[in-house]
Amino acid sequence: MKSLLQIILLIFGFGLFSTAQKVEKENLGPKVRIFWDSGNKHLQATGSYYINEDKIVLNKTEKHGKWSFYSYDGVLEEDRMYYRNRIHGKQITYHPNGKMKTLAYFTFNVPDSIFKEFDENGRLLLSGNYSLGSPEGKWEYFYPDGRAKSVERVQNDTTYLMNYWEEDSLHTQTIKDGNGFLKSYYISGRIKENYTFFNGLKSGYFEERTANGALAVKGNFDLGKKSGEWVVFTLDGGIEKRVNYSNDSLHGAYEVFYNDNLLNTKGLYTMGKKTGNWVWNFPDGKPEMIGDFNNDKQHNKWVYYYPNGGISYEAYFDNGKKTGKWHYFYENGQDYRLGNFVNDQKDGNWKTWYENGTLLMEGDYKNGKEIGLWKNYWDSGMIKNLANFKDGKLNGSWVSYNPNKVKTSEGYYKEGLRVKEWKEYYDNGRLMQISNYKIVTRKNYANGIAVMGMKEKLSELHGDFTAYSQLDYMVKAQGKYNKGLKNGVWVDYYPGGQIPTVISPYKKGKLHGTMKQFGRRGNLIYETNFKNGVKHGWLIIYDNQGKESVRKLFYNGREVPKKNEGDLFTP
Image 1: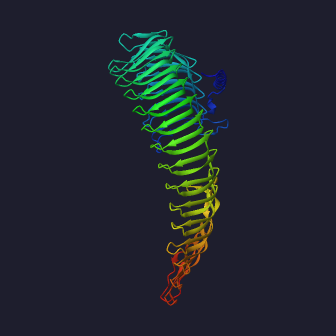
Image 2 (image 1 turned 180 degrees about the vertical axis):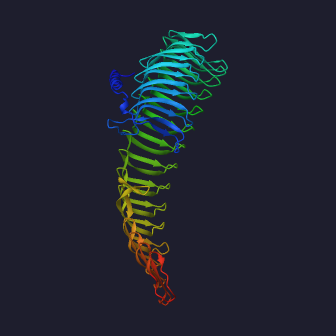
Image 3 (image 1 turned 60 degrees about the vertical axis):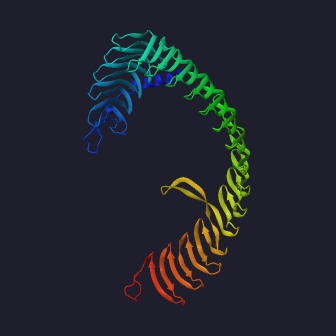
């Protein structure tokens, strides 16, 4: 129901609009035609746009005055009056044969005043009235043959059925002055629904039946609102649902059943809100979850079960918020996870176990975020990771081990990102590589375009990098990174870590300068010059005696051809 203030404001606004906002001829622009197709063969709409006192169209979306709309094949579908793109005045829609389908009046985009609906032969099907956008007063409905079907009275957003006539040959009136009954039927003639009315509102017993006559729903109404016990039946006559209402809201016992009449759900409602103890069961009748509600929110202890009857987890709520000890179990009954909630957030110590009972992980939460030292274990009970957290992000030292207690990595995090020196180890504990990281801030990109004001922090390789061979654990490669890109001289070594295989110069991640390749004895084999990642300059190949055997010139990645054998290169 509208508040008094809303009604006053609407009346005041509509009154001003309807009296002051009129379609004046001098504000109508030239007639325009809009087409469905680019070839302008199929008219879609015609009308005018609003123009100001200077005869200028300020906005080609401000329809003004009468507009007509057509289907793709040219049939008139609607006439509509506008005031500066707001529906204002008469609106008529049409059947394909040109007969009027609906007649309505609008004020400022809101239906107001008469509304009528007609069939394709022009017979009246519906007549009523809108007030400030809501149905109001007397509404009449008619059968296709023109005989009266029903009369409703709408008052304060409540609809009262005052008169009703059946579509039989006698035109039997079953509701008069708001009192009587209403039945709906299947095509076979069997009764589908049966309502009783008192003073225009559904009252008393109600039932709905299936097409074969079996009872589907039964219940009661009190002055138009559901009241008392309502029962929904299965096709075979069993009870599917049994609930209670008060003033159209669920109130009292609530039960749902499986097809074999075993209980599915049981609980209580208080004026539409769950309250007290509720039970949900599996199809075999075993409990699925049991717990309490308070004012439609989970409250106190809840227990969740596996289909085999074992407990899945025990939980506690305080008016919808998680609280207290939460204990999870594996299906075999072993502990899975244990911890506490405070004000809907994980808090304090939490532990997780493998199914064999071995501790998997343990650490502390504060306000739902990991803090301090967290330990992860292998299923043998040996330490897997030691990690430090701050406000839910990795922060501080990190160490990890393989199942044989051998260290596999160690380093540092800051706000969830790698920083400083990191060491990785082979499974036997020998050093695999040493790298360094730095946090950098970069712009975010979407489809290759930088997003204004959007930046993200990343952890990138930065500083010295050394890799070690798995053959002899000597240096295999070393160089430097600058914000994730190779920079400066990089050296790769033969086994033994003394003789280089390749010396490569980099600039911002691209080869830049003279790259040299060496033989196993340290003799120079190749010299190749690069610029910004492509060959540029001389490529020289040396024979076993160290003498030059091949010389080629490159320019921006392409070989520069000689004019003739023995000639200089053509630039």
